[in-house]
Amino acid sequence: MSAGNSPIVWNELMEIIIQPTADAATDIAARIIARLLRGKPDAVLGLATGSTPLRLYRKLIAMDLDWSRVTTFNLDEYIGLPREHPQSYHSFMWENLFRHINIAADHIHIPDGNAADIPDFCACYEQQIANVGGIDLQVLGIGTDGHIGFNEPTSSLASRTRIKTLTGQTRLDNARFFGSERDVPHHVITMGIGTIMEARQNLLLAFGPNKARAIAEAVEGPITSINPASILQMHPVVKVCLDEPAASDLQRADYYRWVYAHKPDWQAY
Ligand code: GLP
Image 1 (cartoon, rainbow, N blue to C red):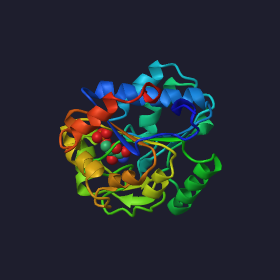
Image 2 (image 1 turned 90 degrees about the vertical axis):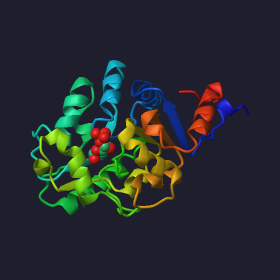
Image 3 (image 1 turned 180 degrees about the vertical axis):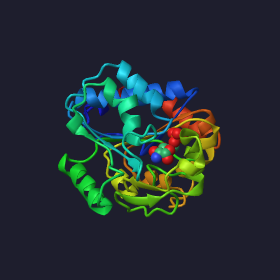
């Protein structure tokens, strides 16, 4: 049997894709998602917010894909921020993706940061993910401290969707969106690390020099809750799309570049 027809998905467990620019790295991520949606029109996508995936969403919109049967689950949301607040992740997703595509509104899931009973909401969110058969592909950014979703350092590596308290660093990092650090909420709902690890594929994007240390620790460091993204080393299908500055602390960057440059055609994106 040729490798191309094999039912076994051949993969680098964690594949590091280093591109000269964020735009080139995002092109690859967009192609991976487009291929999934064309091959599985009722795919379930896990989506992320922050500045990192903005370019990805613009590219996906421009690709004119059919989203009519796609279901989405967002990673996280601030607690207590009105839905209509410009910095709510609800507003972010509608503004930057959903209003531009033909997705069905009832296929969109974003944690409700104003739910009356947050633990109950979190349990239902997990149940909703299970009800649609799990997430096919989860898009991830990374915090400067290695957080994924809003799973801050020392989050349980087995955690599920729940309430989290943001660290001072994350509130400082996100203050640029709010105008002042004082206005950044302290509490959030986030999918857990255990939830993220159950996605069938993870696609992590990181750009810029301020992500270099978190990426080096996540990819080449020990698996530790101090850098929550490091657990992805245990995930069977992870692609890490980086620009050169985000890759600049990787000890084995040349090896990753070589591997990527010599992929067989049937593995190319
Ligand atoms: C927030 C989000 C994360 C995101 C991170 C990085 O904390 N909850 O999902 O990955 O910010 O944001 P940015 O992409 O703006 O650097």
